[in-house]
Image 1 (cartoon, one colour):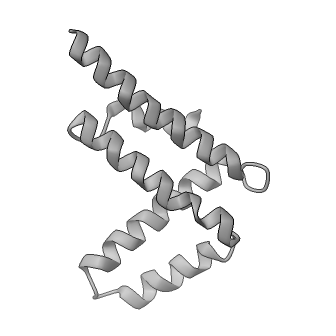
Image 2 (cartoon, helix red, strand yellow):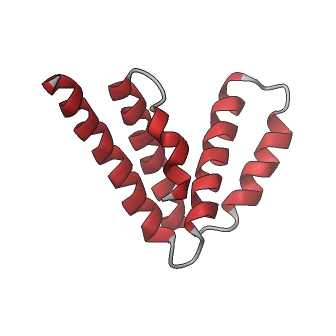
Length: 104
């Protein structure tokens, strides 16, 4: 039982870190938009790395989203992805409580 609690605390810290990162951008963008852009940018990047069939279309969408952020703001998105990956690894798959993440 203690191990499960410990894993949750570690995973929860990644969620907390993600929220802090999103809040860094919330002065200019809504948290909802930041989270949605993060998910879409991540999906587009991963998809383009493994499927070249629609690369140009996805890359155009990626660039469309990126234009809304400056260089410093864009540096936060890889950090968000790292926290998400660490969260998934520690939970052995997508955590069920992530479904409500965008509601915070």
